[in-house]
Length: 120
Image (cartoon, rainbow, N blue to C red):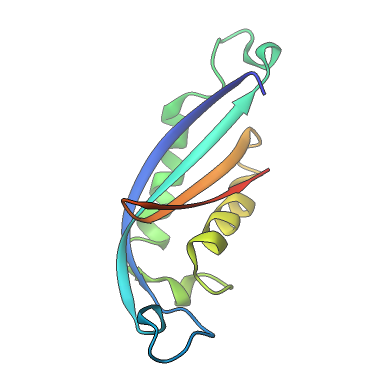
């Protein structure tokens, strides 16, 4: 891949992870200030004639979707899989690939020190 761009989005939500021992902290409902990064890529020739992969402004539809569907929601009610950071990265990738065919990776952070990513 010749070029890549990324854009960061933030939201707050709760979740509760299934299949964990009752004493595990993530088995209880809790929340995070999530960060989601979209990475889009293209080869050099794909940038012509404009000169960029995609206008960052075109990613506002993703931000609108986050605000409507994820922000201040309980992710167990939104996602059809156990809402781990790994599953969320894959779910977002699959949900948005048709809208953004240049999408190469989705990264999800639940804390400033942890990241999960799903890459094409």
